[in-house]
Length: 475
Image 1 (cartoon, rainbow, N blue to C red):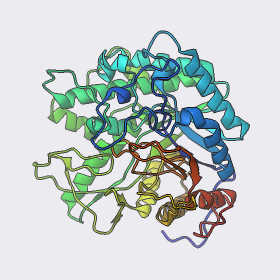
Image 2 (image 1 turned 30 degrees about the horizontal axis):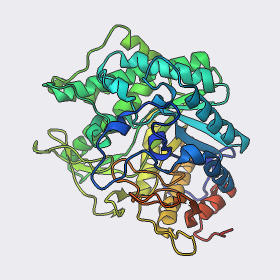
Image 3 (image 1 turned 45 degrees about the vertical axis):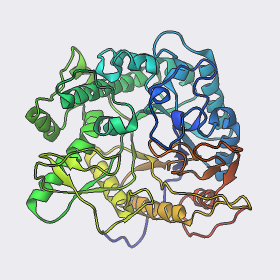
């Protein structure tokens, strides 16, 4: 669809960026914080531990001041479960409450809306030892954690996200370092989707609790959504794309919005004797959880063709190898790739926004979108990242086209506000607008430096998305 005139971004559009606690805070066992599953896992070879990260725990005021300098309207960050509840349940850590009160108050002092992610890949290690999401009690654990957050922060936090990338926890959990499969499990797929079911029920109950405790607040999910294309005009490839879209995307949003399992996914699970068991009250809980908006992370699309039954699965968030009997993943020759092998598809961003809004008709906020790259700090304290500016520029253009298509957009929070430790590729894969002076194993100064993209994004925000030209003024 070609438009003669583009609609502007909404007047109250929430421009900002994102981080997560375990990737940016550091201080992983400080001030009473208990270990999370991320703190006790074996990190990928050649990547740093998570004990310091970007040291935001000690530098949050500096980081938030820099965000304010960029003009942020919103900051999406997560609350570490084990910093609040060191054992996952039971006693509350007052130092953890104090820290997040300080972060929230600092945001508000700079007129930045805090957008809080409740769970971002960091199950408390004490709960991991009790089975993590495989334990049906995990639903109550999460609801209790939510209640503690609502009681302590709900007077000031008006926007909440439930579970970050639940679909990735399910599809590539071992790569993220989060999936806990009990020893001796015979049907791993069934166990995986049972854990997924517990998360879905927990999410629904927390959405209902939020509306009960904080009637003025808004809450939504935050999966990783990537529209899947058929590789050709063969009807069989279209079926494969429908299959993969259902398993990767629509299961999670159908359940969040409608409280029902996607029919294609349920058929797939039936085929593999992997349908999750419903506990008493689950169906009612799922039906009663209603999001106010949809948050999702977008990095790229995927492309598939008809399965030949030999696909081995695996991969990471954006490079699935397909699923046997479902779809075979293929490279898209029409797309460029990042230095880390992820395809770049700005037009696919518009495609995805249109499809999500068409299916669910809820306001959308993008909770992650960005370019991981090898950034270099020059001798004069500058970081020249025109590749990141180009990436964001093209995606914002497509987002504005989607708005003109009629998609209701709330906000845009690229990944990431500050350089942090990437999920499985360490410090070297940098995403931030703010450079942190450290490498994989040398902490150096941890000083902050404004990248070129910092100044460019500041201009974009000041113009409410009108000025996307690559020129900027470094002040």
